[in-house]
Length: 636
Image (cartoon, rainbow, N blue to C red; front, side, top):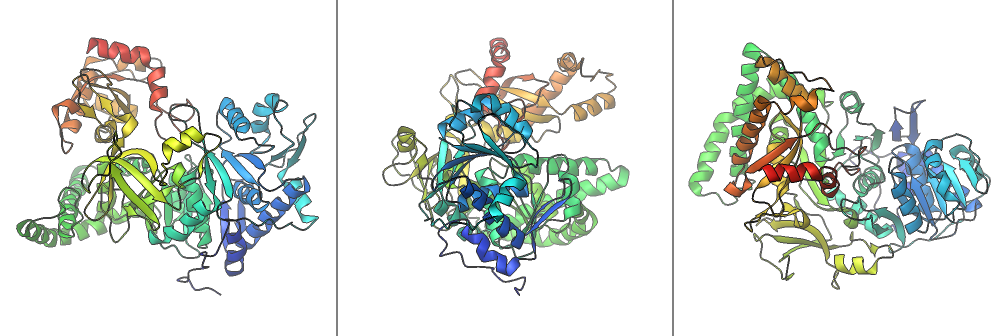
């Protein structure tokens, strides 16, 4: 039997992702692989059961005539059955085409059509019903529901999960050899601009992640992982493959149950996006701010001390992004300050931060943030309270991880160093000439994890990947002397003001989000004289501010739009924006947000203004609020 410190299996010779589960099952057979406490009834799947169900699902597909390289659409969401279907499709030698069941029907039909899928696996009857009217126009040979509902459609065979598993138990699996360059999946890009494109990811692309992510974290068999991101997305998907290959237990949660599960499940690891860590931060801050009198002063005292302590510690350890090469005097000063503040910081850890960590389950070895820019104050706070937070970077097209911070080299403000088998270079956005370390330009990536291209789009592929295999990320950044990638914005998100000044909106948005009164913000201003912003206010915080200032404002749903135009509220937001923008390192007068509008409806997945990984779709927001934006700048 394995020991907790053992690495389960050496996957260096694996040629496909499904090979992993038959290799890991003999070592971790009785350990729980997948746990879904929110299913009725509570569903747990051991490693042995997982391997068996994957084989049965694959065999069930083969009974329906599935041939190698057939495209099968998988429109479903996080659950053990999603994982079984995902790997069952690959085990049968087919290629899956993935998307959330919650996606818009137009997008799902587009993906079905564009991908040339001839079979369909869906979450449940509800998902099938929204697609059903158009299925007759597509070459869909059969449908599988991941639920146990019974559905009939004229002219198309429909199986539920139990039926396809039962079919798979009636005959032996026909082994389909797969190689690392064989296509494993099509993941359609999130569509922040234009129509989604199908990124072609091979077995080798994902095996790269399984082999190399152990350079970032070293989970052990039996470690618990809380999963909240969409399993079909490249980020969560690669993480699940890697963590399950290490014998971890993945427990599925959701936004509603997340904070409760975090405390009760006591995970060792968690993968998330910045918005998730911001929500945890907001909850902790709310609890801390509810303290009164001496207790509140004590909390603020320790937070201030610890903030100074970690900044001195960073300089002393040469992990300060703003000062890579401190002088002898600076290093000595930082060392002395660190030594003097350490006892008080440790006391604060016992008195305050330990309680904070208990609210997150108390067992976190590391949390990983990716899929967007993490605000500096969030990064600082997690370091202060002793929750190890690592930032990773990558894209769907790179399977996705290319860079990550490590526990032994956690350079705050960076995306970390390249993971093994990954090359990075910075080039001039116009000429594509290579730039020196420290110079800002376009980030290019080359490595085993780079996709094969966009499905049926050779022109888009040629534009994204040059003849030497370098992938154009579309991100701007620079490389530190220690090889860390620092991102500064998106090339296509750059705002050019009418005076010719280039502004990256993301850092400004991150700075403004420090205000307790700002819940969401998008900075605009292309070809304008100044920057502007659409702001979703934190109504709860605003209501408390109103009461504290005896304003007697009406925050009811019907009166809220009118209330937000109140002159005192407008003045408050002007002050908040000015303060946070000016306090940002490297502030320039052109960074000032000259005009803004407060809006009631937040940006979300449901209203189409955010992607599944919680990135704001700037073009969609601008189109939705175009009249308001035009009016805002006209008055400005």
